[in-house]
Image 1: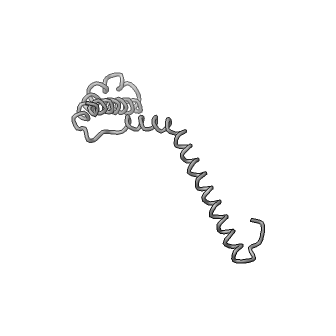
Image 2: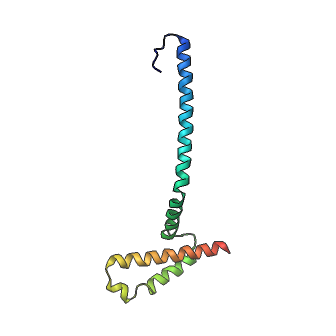
Image 3: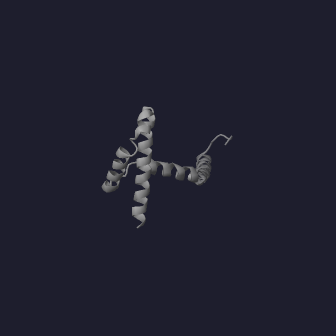
Length: 110
């Protein structure tokens, strides 16, 4: 508002105008956030998938025991021993968590 506030009624009108402007801006912000959520939904689903694969499922002791045994006996082969430490660490970790993810997914479906 470019006009100076001279009376109390001018002040009340300015307050009302600012409150209406605030409501419009809040609604615009809510709409923008909702639109952003819908645009990011595919990226978030991919992120959640990789998060599930790389996280340990501690509530499934038997599945973790089987995947740990597999990791220790199969993936610690000569090929992994000849490669650098990064591959020795990453490959068993990823394979163990992928196996754990799919076993728990299958266990939840039955």
